Image (tube, rainbow, N blue to C red; front, side, top):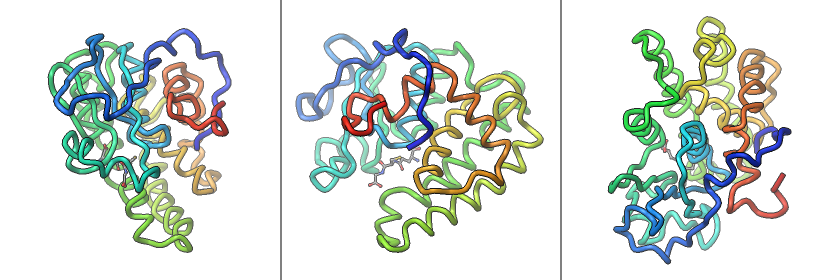
Length: 247
Ligand SMILES: N[C@@H](CCC(=O)N[C@@H](CS)C(=O)NCC(=O)O)C(=O)O
């Protein structure tokens, strides 16, 4: 889990207030009866958190279908969910009559259809930097410490493996951020790169990675966690967050 947010969260909590059980929904429904998009999400999933932050920043009202990655051998493996995402991973978003998987593709779709506030800078150079940092995290770190990989690595080696791959990625990321960052990952505007950074730092904390060698990552993470969109979307306050982990 990531750091515990400290500020009041009430104003936009309504964004994801309803929870719909997976089986109560037909596989081909693309919206709820209320017409809201549906996010298939797991409270602790860093990739789901990226999308939750985008939805909160863009003030998009949605409903959550929790997919518990552990319970019943993993609900991502159910037939119903596989029909939505054959990769058997969260997140997936039903919106505008389509179902989209892959968190960065979802965020880019939201950006193209609901452009404010911007999550990709207008300037092509900055936009490339945002995509490059996002990919570094989404392709170069998270997949190597994903649940299915940690299962392959075996319980006794999991912590050391996760620390090794996160440290390797964070060494590169720290160096890059030292030249791209302002208040956030690229300059002073929140971007898609920041949506990837915060959940990845939460994973690092969960696997007890020492963040001292990464002062820029640490500083940006703290600034972002003070923002409401990062707080309402935090794993500790999702509809499927277990009572003992709620904050
Ligand atoms: N590239 C995908 C990765 C999705 C992913 O790895 N999701 C994880 C949770 S963060 C998952 O569903 N894992 C289930 C499993 O490993 O069985 C994305 O960005 O959406």
